[in-house]
Length: 126
Image (tube, rainbow, N blue to C red; front, side, top):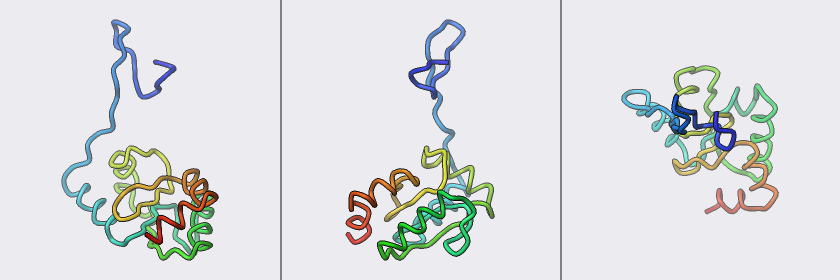
């Protein structure tokens, strides 16, 4: 494996070959896009805003509530197809994932950084 880029593997001849996520197509893609676009601000998380099922999801919910953001949640633990498909669709391997106006903002680390800099509040108020 190429240590500089873990998403590449070595062919038998030693050349690197990039591995890209599978394209999400058909009904699953439609379901994912429908969920992403169901509200202006959508958080895909473990649990829901009233009962987060992991610390990262709880932290992201707390941040969104603190800045007064109106958001919807999607519990990925209730739909394994969306859970796996969204990782491929967004090319983002972890949850939570926050989407604003249909675009991926990021996960807990990025949301926390944006919150601390004030950029998150500016974004959701734009």
